[in-house]
Amino acid sequence: MKLQDLSQSDFDILTALENVVDGIAAMYGKHTEVVLHSLDANNPSVIKIANGHVTGREVGAPITNLAMLKLKTGQDISNAYMSQTANGKTLRSITTVIRNRHNRAIGLLCINADMDAPLQEVLRVMLPDLPTETSPPQEVFARNIDEALHGTIDSVRIEVKNNSAIAPSKKSREMVFQLHELGVFELKDSAQVAASRLDISVHTIYRYLREIKALQN
Image 1 (cartoon, rainbow, N blue to C red):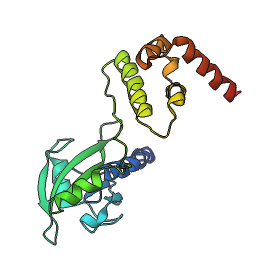
Image 2: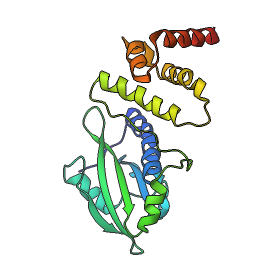
Image 3: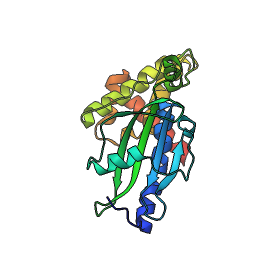
């Protein structure tokens, strides 16, 4: 396909994706390179890169031949494919085409995982840094608002109850305060649901909510 000049709005779209590059790299660690390419006819090149040490590239590097081939296939999200760097490093890659509102390709987002990296090291960098005495928080992937409400309340209850730094007499108050911070009590009937799942009275919840309101005034 023939590359064309990009407009300012096209560059704005690409700029907005720079945080996505950093986010993917933070998720998968230093052995995964994430590259954002501009398809501007004047300078088709890398405009953002994270973990560039994987291939030795920097901002300004040209688009690879394989990336251009993936663009010509007509697939906006390529199948995963294997490739090799100049120094023989094996990569597992995927290329995604970025389009503007006119459906014109303006960029490429490429993810390259170093398959030669030691597995234990890959797993270690992907694990979050958590205190050894605590368990990772449970994320709730709800299918409806009731599941979201119940899951959020249960997560806060478990977290607070397992936190030995909070005195037993303060745990109910802390749970209500945390749920308030999460906006739970803006939902209909949430106080009644929370009272049931936290095993405290609705009057206690309202009392703590009044305390919060007084503190905010």
